[in-house]
Image 1 (cartoon, rainbow, N blue to C red):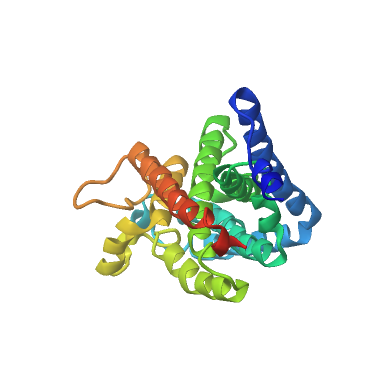
Image 2: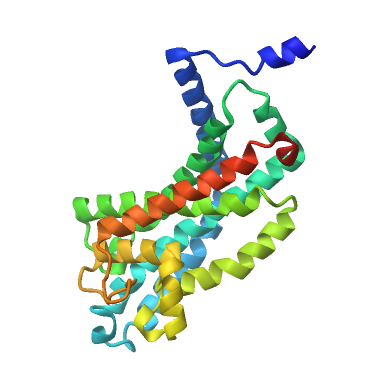
Length: 280
């Protein structure tokens, strides 16, 4: 019995081993795609809030907010925040699914497969990233409503930046998820953190108009870098976002911060995910 259990954990080496790990990652990504396709109502509901914000705030406040306050039209200023809002909900829901999978035994079944746990974790994260990016991409069809014309290069850039932001938010959501056993606890944590992080990122109003302590805290807010990155693509003349002292990081540095944050979060998650007693 012991020999059989040990041999079931042995993975092929070389090229076959790489293909096996990639198949495991692909299977987990496909699982999330199937979940997305099987529940279109949930997708519509997730997109309803950012759509309402775009139409209500973008249409109603654009006449009240002077162009000089945001470096251009308010609707164009708001649009990147709406895109970020569209990916935030599906990205963090990966954490709830991880807790649910652990409760119903799905994680236990995954852990006894020959695939390495790092591959399983990457598949879970990339699956959530892919579905979140897809939902955010739906709002790219409304680019003219955000003051962005249909031009292939800016839209492709926005899509790539959305994918990076979704990857970062998904990775961050997995950190508390592996330390939580009850979905209710995780949902409460999201309710306490999601809105403050979004509003403190400058997604809806310029950081310069917020209290000084919020502007200072934005340096540690990954959503602030994601918002700034998206906004520079939509409206290069928009109001400045995150500053390190008197220096505003260029887009490549902000993208690097997001990537480094995601990798650090995955490493923290992997440390806990690799402990069998905690994940079963």
